[in-house]
Length: 109
Length: 115
Image (cartoon, rainbow over all chains, first blue to last red; front, side, top):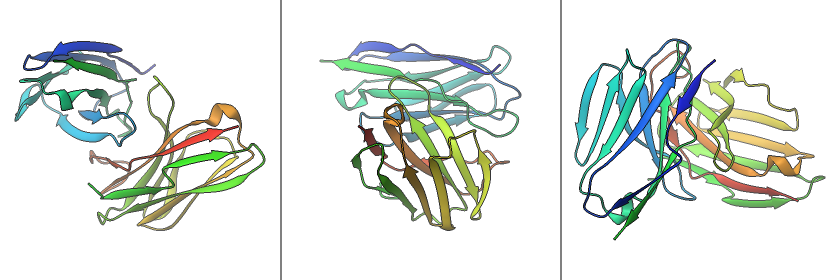
């Protein structure tokens, strides 16, 4: 079956760095998406990785290892507004997104 | 970000009521999606429309009925719902539909409570 595993909740300090891990098992693979979702709001697109390696976009970076079925989202210079849920979603061979339950990130001053 | 809008934002209904959720996308996309998001659970894909044709229906109970009159509008008609249907209902759109690696853009959702 298809499965996504990411931590339920993480806590980090303002100004620090945090890494949110995601492991996945899917039927085929067509890339992996990360979304950010603030409470009560729409998920918003953060990144898409289809090749192995690190993609950097400002304070956020996303890494993919297809052979390990593993991705992470790295957030640097954390700000209070980064408190949100982060959703990992690989795309299977049918181009369907397989969603994780999300990691709730709590930022403390 | 107002690319995808949803109304109402909040809805309380009884089990015998009939109501409709509305979604509108202003991005010129060809595909639209309905998702259900329950607390601490992954998003569940309900329906997919591509160029106004339904291309996916993921075993959703018939008390949920989608309608896509054109590529910019998507409705979800609700009838005789159950309390377990209480959730956040999210609409999304993408440039192309299934069969592509397109990014999906989400609306803010409708928070539904069924009493």
